[in-house]
Length: 273
Image (cartoon, rainbow, N blue to C red; front, side, top):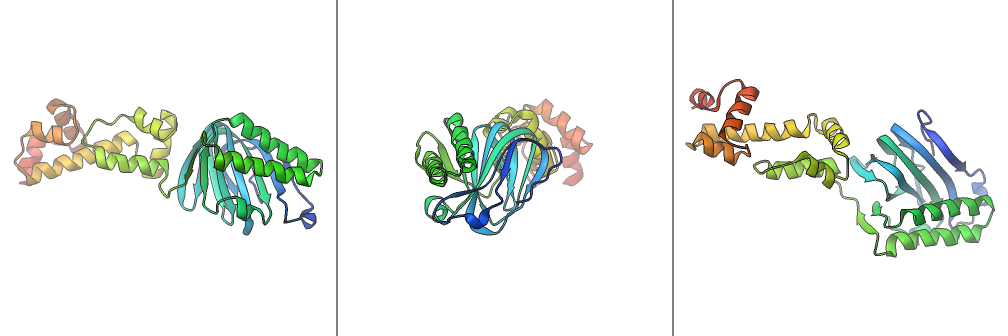
């Protein structure tokens, strides 16, 4: 596995050099790291069907680029990935622990689907991950397998942990779809950020990166576009169009429309009809 070194502070890192000695009937630790990662970095897959990457967020929040989609992760989240693809991670600031495990037994005990978990007891998972590393250093192969199975049980069978298969919609795409369906109603950026599990500042920044405009501007553009349609195609009153388009009153609608389009709604209607 290749990991971009620039900007990364490794608190602890281990990469095995004796893969030839692996007993694939057990579970083997290939790589372990506890690190602080700002900005963007790359995990390069090794095309191994019997390997899994366990990526745990100790602190902070960020995103991981998975099969063409950005998936948001926050403190206490863990994602299980196969090792057949590349993964890009991006964050303003987060601290993570990851392990790469290999062995034929993995195919029987873990899902082949990309899975995300919200961990109820993150300290317990941190301890298990560290134990896997320590037992590998001590060459206790049986205990490495035992601790790995304990990790799998904690993830897939502890009902206190929230488990779901990652969908193809990133948190930002999910927020965009919500706005598309609800722009005529009150929408608060704080609520969107909370649903996406991001801070407001990080949500706005990420939304702008992916959509090309801020969530506020995206909402305004949808409302203006809808209002234009009603002005051209209906005889609804300006007050009614303002309400139907999601604006907070006729005065707010007229002011915003003129600011965005350059003319008042009434003059736009006269010009277009």
